[in-house]
Image (cartoon, rainbow, N blue to C red):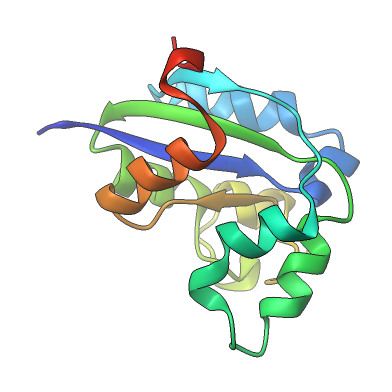
Length: 139
């Protein structure tokens, strides 16, 4: 297996609930190496650019609004099989469909406010990490 990079974004609901430490602890216990981490407040332009692939879908405007409603914490992660392992750890997008013990099952309120973002492919993992972090910021 190859070492992969993935992006976690602890979304505004995660920050409002003060769950950043809990999520980070679960990531590290699952063997993820934290390459970079910062707390930011996305502008509508930044959120729109990041989620641009969803532009035109019914949920796009609400997603951009939600992601700009408070601060969030992007985290660049690395490990073998990072994409698949991370998506298993966080669970399904809708917490009611997520497996027991997953981050979303435990902490998310609904499909729209689901605590964390996760890259869905190796290519998107690289692209998304680069969206938030310059290579010089990654340790």
